[in-house]
Image (cartoon, rainbow, N blue to C red):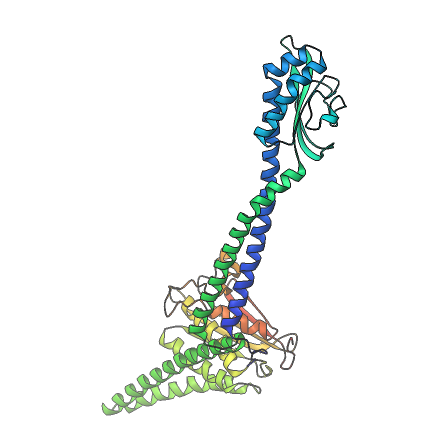
Length: 425
């Protein structure tokens, strides 16, 4: 049986995995929150600049001042007005200009009378863009000012610099940080709880030894069931034979004992004919034969004498074969024709091919690989529906470098194991 190379317990491994997952989730949430905050801040800047520019473009003060055609008079009227708007809206600039783009207002008085730095639409329309002007890169919206007769008399541009947007984003980051730290702390708490829970169940066993412990338990369970059935069957036949002898019907008693001996000897001959056989597997097969007869199942077995030795330990061999046979017997419980067949023979690669077939209804196509998942079971929950049998089978087989698959018509679980000594590590 393969044991864990390291000494870290299963509980510690669970703690580290859950904690790592919590850290990854926390990092992803942090990135999402930062990106979303950046997007929201930029979108808010676009909304504010557009709303302000539209409002100013329709303001009577602006339209009257620009309609006069006197830029100096317009500046004296609109510059204080624009500065008040900037202060009230937390914008970085409001530029009112002539149709040709000559500035009438600007936060920097030295820029008055200069040309507007930005895109002026070819026709009167609203435009929002990111452009580098006298104050640096900014999000800005330009809106036409239209006189009552429909004539273009000027433009209004309102903007927020990228630096201001970044400052707003930085003010929002602490909230994102608090959310991220909170999620990570909850994840760490969950990892601690998972570690305590796992330790109560598994103690300080490393993962490999925990798997071995489960395998040992499953081996003892299935072998115990098989031997119990065998003992029960022989006990019934012996009681019947003794009763017949007491009644003086010795011929019938001899027939019963002879038939019992013949059936057992036939199976023993097949099991012991295999040169590289495992006594534990032999005992399991003999016991399962009795268990099948006890449940009214036609037990079929074919073992090729030249089947090589298994790379699995006795415990793992019993766990794999026992779980597959138990599942097959459960599958034929309600079948009209009830049979289970076990075939053990050399594989094409020189290893072992184990096949367990049954006459049951089969595995639904939609379940696919789910039947091999830990905790999944088509049986009712409880002692008979643990959901670890096939998961354990696949774990043991894959760990040995083998494969396991299921085929329909009839339902057949096929396990291929490599020759002994050819391990994947």
